[in-house]
Image (cartoon, rainbow over all chains, first blue to last red; front, side):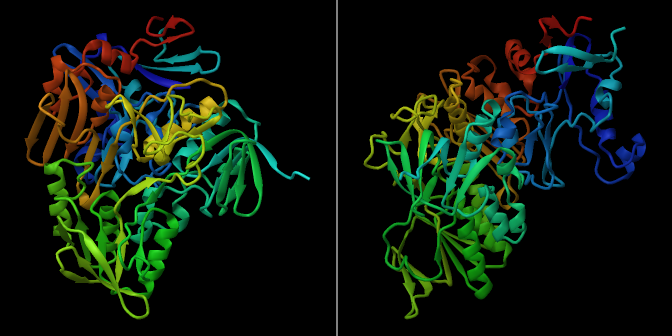
Length: 160
Length: 437
């Protein structure tokens, strides 16, 4: 099971996690094209919150008791038993926002254009999610652990 | 010879509650026999999607709530299209319409709700329908294929009434909604948001008549509906009538048994009824509501699943409390996004209302003694879950309540202990702080 964690004491609220998340989910992997030229801007699945000197980046934590999965009206949101990843099946999703209403983090977002709900998808198979890979302060890190034995298997970026 | 089949977990009802129970049971008991009985002939489907089906936006094979191999994968014996006709608490058996008998070790009653049909004259006429099941939707669809030019009268301006009105309008059918109270959606929306929906529905071309009821459904000599007569004598011609007044718990199996019933089947925090070994959840159950700190009917899909899940865990011996549910709704009828939870207006002057309103945004909180007891957000519904969970966790918000209706509301609007808990910023795995390397 993989999770992304935050070290808020080194987050400066620069928002690059949002930018690289948007780029990752854009149809074209060029910043200028993705943000300026190809239709509406892609939506970020992470959000930076800031208040004074304090800031952090929020995204889906893939809760072990996922209220979004339980509440989903259509069965579009499911949790993979093996990986613990929670995903939205776009074909089944009707964009009703019930998941948004029960998420304790406010981590599920509406894609108003497509009338679907979107959330962090761990950059679908990328070894390191874009937000983690591009955080200039390593304020985000990805932990992979064995959910059964509760042992840390790997961590990125590597502390060494 | 006794040919009664013995089932470890017998589930009556194959919708959100029943499926929630099955999934919870299989988390810990992979082999105990499970049987799901339903009078509906289909695998579990998403009930809210029947309006998309009727609108012609989704085909019937795209309504499934779970993958097609769900029952097989979970080793579940299905008894669909077969009604339970009797419950015998002396020998723990149910009698099925087919004549079959099933015995249970643990029983879950997830029988749902049944539409309320008042005893009005003409309700048996052809072209009069209710709208809570896929069979209803198919019957209405079939009828409208025959009569595509029929005008519709929808009796009841609640969720079901508004939902089917949207579907019918998408089929270019003229709709008149008749709501007995002064405004539509009066159970789940306040005046402001209810008016927003009212306007949107009118703008879509439907008529809404409030403050009146239908006293009679008129039918011709062939028994087919041709109009309704209102309580003021007005007559509205129509070719189809949808009765959408509401649903009530489907209690016919438990009435007259030792299972305690109030408005619904009364359950404890384990979702167990007054009879040990028998559980209930969903629209049929009266379960704990954390806003009122008492048992109430909260007939909404997410609570049915969660109640079913809690029942399932307890049925396998894993003692788990139902966290409680309250009336929650997320809707997007006629393009207006509204979420609401708990109370919709202050019951008396001991409650406080906080309102933020600008452009298309409307946010309202109802508070009592620092606790949020109700919320309605419209326009900007992003991050509404942050507040819903404050309601659920009974967090005192007195010191930061105003920030909850501001545009930049987020986790940082909450006290540090709360956001830290939600983010789990310092994970410990194997007792080791992951942030330290």
